[in-house]
Length: 434
Ligand SMILES: *Cc1c(COP(=O)(O)O)cnc(C)c1O
Image (cartoon, helix red, strand yellow):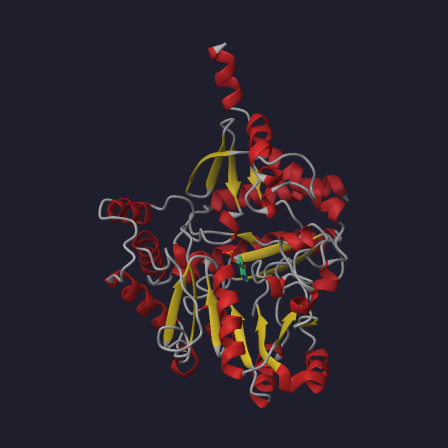
């Protein structure tokens, strides 16, 4: 009996059944379920470096990296040390600490568009707070977002959103009153004419344009030529705030995020994921003029019991210190580039109907022969083919997000061997498929 009990505990199916008895769908975030690819998620025992190991002892090269935060891989020694050390001094005080000042200064150093920054506990909180602030600052109601961009699960963002919404094929969420949903306007990413059209109609009522400068939640999309600087221009002309949602791209593409990468300065920036060093942290910041409306400096209320807690701050500080080491981004981006180059060359040579979008250390293999530049073109992907690809990779010990509409993340912990093993696996699988 004891032996059987042990066996059950080492079985993902057992845990998935148990999980479904107490947690909706057995997962705490819908993207983790294997709904669009079929099958059941594995349950994780531990992660180290570029690998995660499931409760059955199977090891996977991990390209999910917790959906972005783990740019140093799992349990990086310096971050583990920082967290361990901090726990012995207390994990939350409900009073300010020097650690918050230190992390705030690192953020300001990374992003010159930020004079003041407020820490929160998730990317969702950051974007919700930034929009509230933008509405207060402009005294306007509407926001404009782009189809396929994901900004967390705040009510106003759950329309034509990426990530789990795209994966599950949901265009809106019940529970969001239509009065709220109606305040969100849409345009296709990369389509400045449509943005102009929306502004022509409603320009004087739009508080903010919120955009992932490099979208990664419908798979990776690349902004066309002047798209982001045109957004900068049109928002400035209409006294609308431009919010860069850099929850994924911040500290991912460069230390200064996408805004450094593309050279466009937003009014407000939202951060999350990497900035928490693997613990739950988000942040929003911008110019002193705008941010001084936030309570207690100003009347825009926003608060958090665990906001800026010392444990998360220590993890974030250590993370950003590591990322500032000379050559960090160059090495990571070049390593990823070589990996993507190898894949792209084969895909092109064999004329396989796959489009690879890539920037920095993020990439997506779309199962479509068409260029993928926005939500609509991403939707031309053959999600059934993706599902086969996903499961074949998994069976070869390679884990990517269980959705066509997500990015693969390469971390500094991924070795050349990990990447070449992945290249070989991808080529063998595609060879079989086409
Ligand atoms: C992940 C993500 C969010 C939401 O962050 P959470 O921490 O999951 O709430 C918001 N915006 C973007 C661009 C994201 O990728």
